[in-house]
Length: 152
Image (cartoon, rainbow, N blue to C red):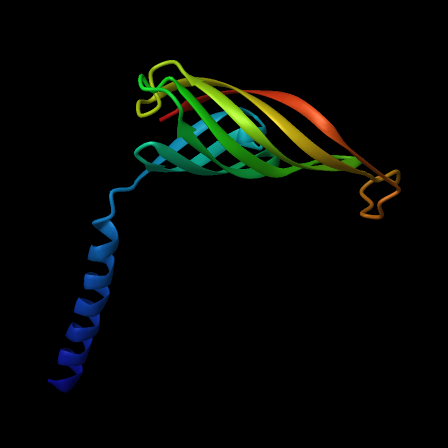
């Protein structure tokens, strides 16, 4: 009998912990697209907190993290931050961090298409030997990238 009570108490403790997590006003959404906000061609796992969205993206050939926040009353425009890595398949790897602007065709809070622009600073490491991690040359600079995606 004692063992059953212990199992029951542990189970109730765990359930109470999970219940408190479900009380947060946070939604988890998904997105698919192309550009730095999607890690190249890939998807996003989005944590939606009303006026701000945080995301982790995994794509081919890279990954990134970032956030977007509404900047207009009618919720079609957002700004954000984005940082990540684009892995070169044969000869270079690029790290980047930048500021984003996105236009949400159906509104920030709704499912739909979004078109974005990223102004970023990058550092590219060149590898002259195939599949080598020895850095032969390093370059830094600024760039602009476009993003196109669909948020579910």
